[in-house]
Length: 316
Length: 316
Image 1: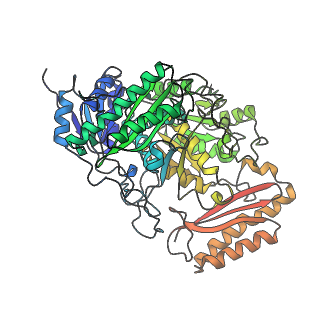
Image 2: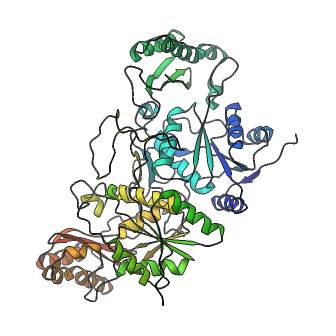
Image 3: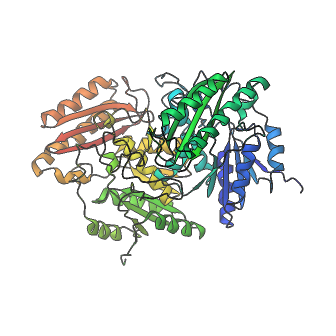
């Protein structure tokens, strides 16, 4: 099949105009937000979106607001031309790529909504995220999913989900999609987006797409490029131990403590450093002591320079 | 002119469907969110909206999330039939009234967006707003305009603007208007909504409507019913002293301290209790010591059982 060139859109107003003109023609829009450096995991999200909508928009934007100043924003990998080629290879291609320069730049002078991006005069607040202007007229609005954002990754990355929820709200308002697809590899993120959409009454359907793995079982991630071949062999302990935990539950082991110990031990014996290994309720993400309802076993672990995420749903 | 009956809509999905079908016909939608118990101030917002849009939606909903448990949610005045009559008397009438029962009720069972309203099993958090379900599956998402929400009314009502920003976001997502009108009587609220719309990239134009006053100068408010005739005479000191402050600026008095002293003294001499009397930048709402740019002088003061708001813009 001939690869189709997507329309590349850089400006918010043009993006919204494109979406509204397509919807006026009766087309439905599926949306896949990404930070670029695409892999097969992202392409599976595109394919999933294609099942639910007439047209597909993929955004490529590394969101500064979800990185703490100590984190890897400046070194986050990117390859825009490579990304375009990959998207063109997806079945059916994609219809538009939204690649804004800066979603937090509101310009100077009074805008249509009465806001004003002042450069001076504002009291300087402590900058806690890698996001430009913290003066009086700068970006000031944050969406928080207060209970769901606290646990799991929220413990070691306190501003992360605030940044994710805010940028996703912004992107939803710019792209105005009918359906949006998120990967269940980032399980907490997916649940936070589901809750946000419900709680803020967005007219958008959220689809959770299953984890895509490399042939050896490693969950696909843009951060896998940070992992050396040797570390990678060791990192397979994450998925392997999670699969074993699921089998153990199926054999009747319902104690979270026992199951967590086994996974932590397996990862640490392989040379990894566990950030967390928790068994939580699939909806509320609250820790469970004994498995009585559907849970998800979530792990974050460091191998070398890479903090890798993985999880497995256990439906009993 | 014959009064026109607005369509009365109770359900979120029906509201969105109505808006989308109107927009598909090329109509623009103007939106006026209210908590009911309407007065001429609200009708001026409707008239303002009519200048900017083909169709007018008014919402009538007392938002529990903006009341602290100690506040007057249960006694907040209401008169739905009276409200309808008033809306029908507005020039051109209104096209739809959105009067939902509970915007924070997400039902039980898994919804389209993956959310689930659980009644049990969740850890019970301290309820700090008059909003139903704080269990694991309950409403969990809050929109905060972090710097703008802190001063003025935010000092004595710490959850108020979180509740306002969240319910307005919900209403925007349900009604999907092109234009929304807010009164400048609630100045901080208006600026917060402007900032929220800019920062979250809503495709909605916000109009600030000027304060409407009773013949004697009192700013119109649903809470004026709490004020006795005697207290009301005394409460006129707010508007009178603010007007005098503006004249003083025009005569060259630029010191906030002096201007504030005069207003506080005038209100207290009349028997009011000043919650705050502050001169702030019109955009950032940051206090200014000396007036060098456009400011707004904002007052909240208690007369009897009523906490009354008023303000005056001073453009130099």
